[in-house]
Length: 271
Image (cartoon, rainbow, N blue to C red; front, side):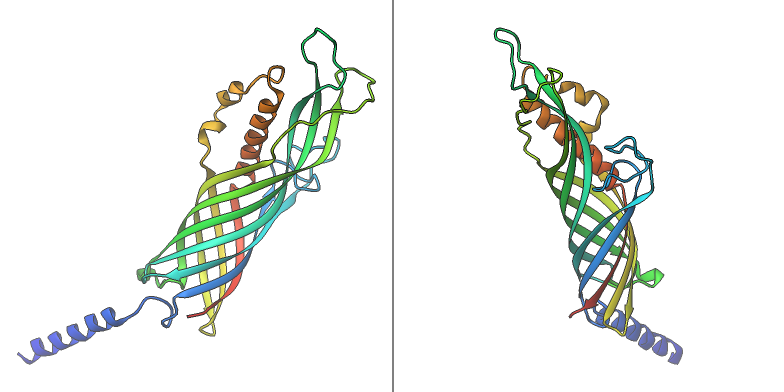
């Protein structure tokens, strides 16, 4: 009888302590971090035309370089297992594409002839992210502390700036200038990702985050090989053709740029 009574008391104390344990680390739920990310620049050029594969100046020797980004993240632990975060990052990369514009010199009564532009774009990106984090208390994690897995939805607002333009004139030797490609260099790139990482906490206040994130584009229909053949003809509508390929090449560039990211961040537990 005494043993049953003791067992009942211990059980009550145990479950009472579980129910009274609040989410968060020492009662702190909100975490604010600044972070930086990097990844090897293998496919596609950096803003200074570096990279192992596909450079604007093909005469340059390929060299390993790094893509970088910087930003901040704020997260709130809703329970012992889950934390929601929003993040912002900014970065700069580059892209190569070919476009067309009507030649200034035209032959009367003949179809419009086009000049060709070999363009080197700087792409300035602003990344807006939503993270849903999952922690496992059985493995010693307690949101926002410890190892976690994040599901990530990301929207990257791209602004393109022409850095170089090599023009091949339809009429060889013509020096009368060229017309605009009429490209609107703005695009929003969407991706979904999976991030694995760990939050370490020091002095019950400061945080150190290390993470690796894999991202996949959500523009899968445009990445099909047959999609490019649906582009408008440059001879019939050079503006629509140029815009089509600006967006397509931006998606391809961002899919490579954003495929994998390694990041580190420091922050603070606020409340």
